[in-house]
Figure 1 (cartoon, protein in one colour):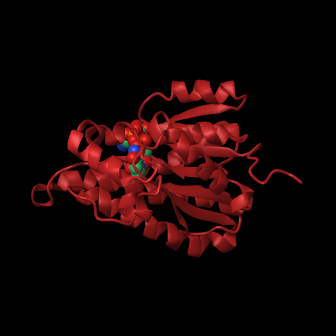
Figure 2: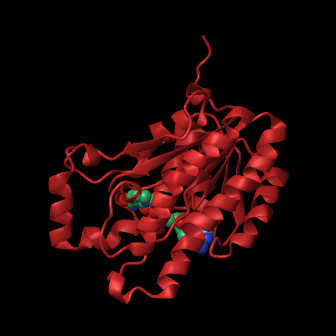
Length: 251
Ligand code: NAD
């Protein structure tokens, strides 16, 4: 029987794949056989080395998703360099922390532009290629704050709740067109994004006490979920938000 998790011959575009969770997922997709394109602001040379060491092709596309108008160009360049776009992982994201009472318009807009506006228009630009090609896989990166309120992160919670809703809407519209749209909701992972929480002794202790697995996630822990949702093993999985959280939501 052929391996339903095999991604050989597929091209995956991973936004923000130079570091953290994006890098973990890019390398996992390459391990499963995919060629990788990373789009982002910073050099993804480390990811490139890891992907090429696995015998897969690697390409970089420069992009700043604080300006959502760049997305059509990013998808066009992906196809130009790699030949197709079969998998999109909408991973690039930022967070701003402030009391809601003091939250500024810039704290709001900067997070929404990257985390939801660019993510939506990337889905649209990718789908315009995937539909005529017979289908594809879209994986949006959600959060525990797609389910919970959080604190001092008004725009982040709003953007991640929106990405969960958008994932379901796009699944409804595109499932019959051969595109699987799903999301992964990571729990608490040790990356730049959570550096402030890890450094705060009290918050770090509270977080660890609540995670049944008893540890922060490692970017490698997301690999299995990403490969599954990117593969034909997930052909009948639509609109789901898959928590990879060491049990956080179960508590
Ligand atoms: P990170 O800060 O290490 O990585 C974020 C990535 O997004 C980087 O590659 C960064 O360059 C890129 N990025 C940010 N703004 C960009 C812009 N304007 N243009 C292009 N690229 C941009 O953080 P991470 O933890 O790896 O986060 C990855 C995703 O996972 C984010 O969407 C984040 O919200 C989400 N997430 C993280 C956690 C966690 O615990 N770390 C939990 C839930 C969700």
